[in-house]
Length: 261
Picture 1: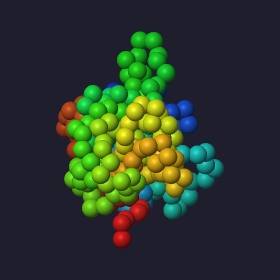
Picture 2: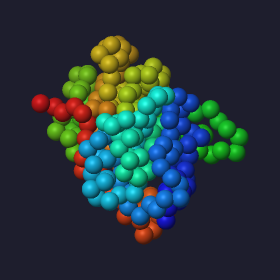
Picture 3: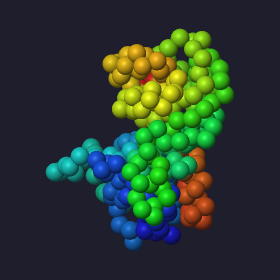
Picture 4: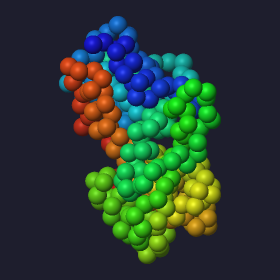
């Protein structure tokens, strides 16, 4: 197996044509002809993750977030891209392409609250003959009714975290919810319009949280990458089935930059 096989597998899982127009997805560093026998999965491709990949003799990294985003004019020591190229480690990033597809990041986050029949919170524009394009940003659907505090406990167990940020009364009745992995501030109006009682997301700005409460939405914010990291086990399984014989592993150095202290 080589890097080109990894690119094809990722395209099958999360077609890059479905990524947001502003995003930077696909193969960002590396040679498609190079071997891909060991692949490390991570949410963020930080220097500690690169060091882990080099020490573990990984040929490639699949990083949910692209470490190369805006246009850059220099690749020098101290950047992840420079370290990857120098070590000969390829880098692939799916980001928003993995968010919108069926079985992707938002569908996995929806399982944290046992959402029934999740639908896109903001459907993508339909492309003729493209079944994946019927999906879109976020998910919304019914959940088992209960108080907000019970939903909070469910989310913490699913994500294996000790704390989350919560806006809304603990006894608020929740029967319909929306999820948005990462930053969910842009989908507050969509969630309210869809009749959701709760928005589960990674992070919100202060004024977005106030706007959510004003719209009658309770909020659970888990930290940005915590809401996304739950997709890695599924991605590991799917890649393993598409690329038999290749070793896939999740990074031990990958973590959210924030902690609850």
